[in-house]
Image 1 (tube, rainbow, N blue to C red):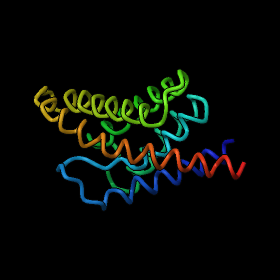
Image 2 (cartoon, one colour):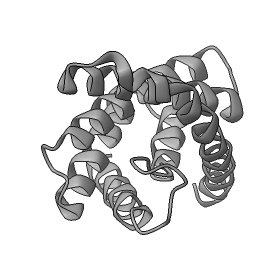
Image 3 (tube, rainbow, N blue to C red):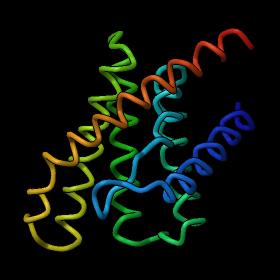
Length: 158
């Protein structure tokens, strides 16, 4: 299971790095497609592994993109971990991919804003939260589709 999880962390890290090259409509945001791997893990594996993938992909992706230990790194790390936690819990109560992904996206964005507010010592950052939740919902829907599609392939292979 360790090697398998490492492969998924590597894949999610690669997606994290590559999505940095896709233009985003907001100046400081990212599409978050690497979260589809975390979502897949949240649906199919224990919480510990979901959290490992969330933290690992953020750490390695930030290392490759040169954002390691920057404010966006910490915002992304805590946001991704919070999303993995919420998504795993929601899958346990049988919520589907779309609901878990939308909730995870909202939690991710909220936690990112909270961490950002702490780091810059200003609550003004929260004025961007509604916009980030709306835009994040688009990628959450895409992530739900990607993760669900991968789950179908995964089930056929195993």
